[in-house]
Length: 466
Ligand code: BES
Ligand code: MN
Ligand code: MN
Image (cartoon, rainbow, N blue to C red; front, side):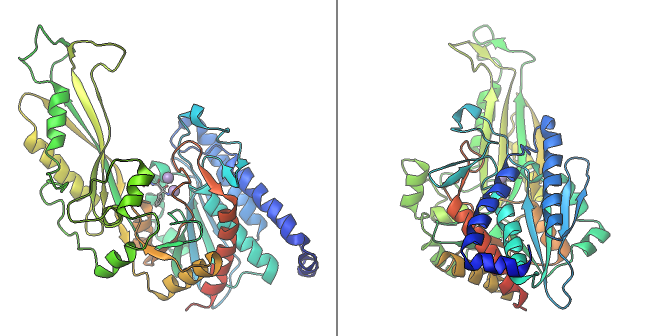
């Protein structure tokens, strides 16, 4: 749209209304594509979603390309070159988590629906809403100012929710590193404290996932005929798992805390003021009788900055109706550790495996399987770029952001930051009640609109931040 026409429309108050409508249209079109990366039958939808992004960004004058990989495409888009101005790289993931249990959704997960001021759909807050807010922030600046005041690269992947395998390979290539050279990395795939209190995060947890299978008899046995004579795999698995923590909820795997630094005093002070993160509020929000933290740390400190060892699922034996007196042939536990800076996922996997081998009794067999992971990430929140980002958050949301570290992980970020040699800044839009990964995932329309304004403001501030 020519600038003059645009300006006169804006003066008459029409433009905002029109833009407001088309903004939600863009978001709805994006959310309607079921880009579930974990499920093979959705591979075509994931690719269609990449095409949608290439189209949208091409329409804004970007040089946008879809790079095919062994799994799902990576979208890279460059704005027209502005000489002498910084380059920011905006990362996001356009894949989403599976939707089950489907019957708990109040509206279809891929038919975006507005109720009570929120858009309900899978991906609304993780991470399509945020991606679209940045794209529309770019669009708004182009419309209002005629062009972008700096260089923008979008790096949008389709495998974050399954471990970013292809992007880990892609980002190693010298020609890719050259193409993605930038001054700073911007990510909004993280949390926001409250609708009027933005969060500026300067860290993410790392992650490593693994499984432990314990087996003993070669078939399910009658628990009377053989009971007492052989090890029960479920009991043994539970005993082995119970050795991983002590009474203070400290992890007892040898060397687990090697390289872990203490939380700094300014961080402890700052985290006391994060809304919703006091011990009482955390207990209330999660519905637990009271918190159980590592002794000596608050809930917020554990979430943001202490490594954890979690059981994610456990199975074995008879789980059907009534009772069945068997000694099962095997038992399985799915586990993961959230890591902090100083811990290496491969090294932690070695240590956890060694721990289980040490405590495994001779009466059972064990199989330890390594799965995906990634390193933790941390940077200085007070850099020039960090300050510009914080200003954009404050300008838009009316309050200065709280400075936090995320309990969640985006395993590829540490790798992107390492390969490109630049900081990643997290300007999250994901509220505690957004239900990411759960049924009825949503984003408040107000947050989406402010997200667009924040993205636009950030581009203008960063253009002059060096
Ligand atoms: N966007 C989330 C991570 C997140 C959410 C960070 C909220 C901070 C606040 C991301 O999509 C995610 O779900 N990551 C997974 C890891 C992935 C390998 C499955 C996670 O953290 O469990
Ligand atoms: Mn995400
Ligand atoms: Mn996610």
